[in-house]
Every structure is written in structure tokens, then in C-alpha cells.
Image 1 (cartoon, one colour):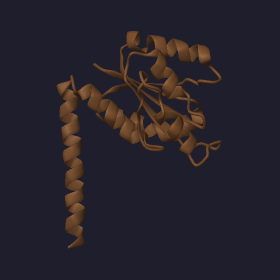
Image 2 (tube, one colour):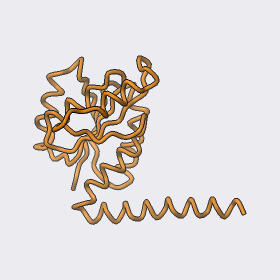
Image 3 (tube, helix red, strand yellow):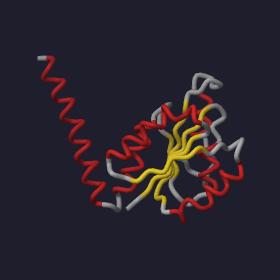
Length: 160
């Protein structure tokens, strides 16, 4: 069974990151949640990044606000795919600082970046990565996307 690490810079990021946790659990993917601050717990960050692949993780979803160094630093240390979630925080410049900090990674250190506060999409993307080699998860993603299509078609019927 695949496992996704969902990490964030502080507990204040949890309301946003909960969307990733919920969607992953909805796909029956094991999730381990932790707070790993790039600036306040650098030793923990280094340990997490260097060892996540040995702990059974397949993907890491990392949320951070403000300077948002967490996703990039984890990506620099880990061989696993990292999905960054920019979080609009109290010390943020409308969230753009977080978006750009995660998006503008140097060559060789990729971080897949979702929209500001887009943890739900990060969870879906993590599931899709896992689904590329796990048919059970892939089948759940297919069903989920079919459900999205049905909702749109039902909404369209309501307009007529």
C-alpha cells in the first residue's frame, strides 16, 4: 500500500492542508501528517527529506506560506515527487510570495505546484502519481472523475 506524507510549516496551515488529507483518505491512501518547519526545525526537515523514501512514502505533499521554503527544501533532499501547496498566511503578500517561492525552483529540483490554497488538487495529483502503478487507486480516480462529469451534467440539466 502506498503512503503519502503531508507536511506543513505550522499548525496554522492545517485548515488548508486538510483538503489534501481528506481526498487522499477518500482514495484509501495511507496518509501521515506532520509539521516540519523549514526555518524553525531544520534538523527535522533534513531528516524527513533524506529518509521519507525509506519510510514507505511514495509522494510528499508540502504546504507552506510566506517565504514557503518547505516544499523546495524537501525536494532538494528527497528522491520522491514533491507537490507544493502555497498557503495564504497572515504574513503573506496576498499569497503571491508563497506561490512564487514554490513555483520558481531551479533546474534539477522540481516541485509540482498547485494553486494558492489548492491542497485538494495536491491530494488528487498525489493519488494520480500513485495510480500510475496501482490499479486500485487508478480505478478510484477514474470513478472520481466520472463523478465530477456527472455533477456538471446534472447542474446543466437544472438550468433548463
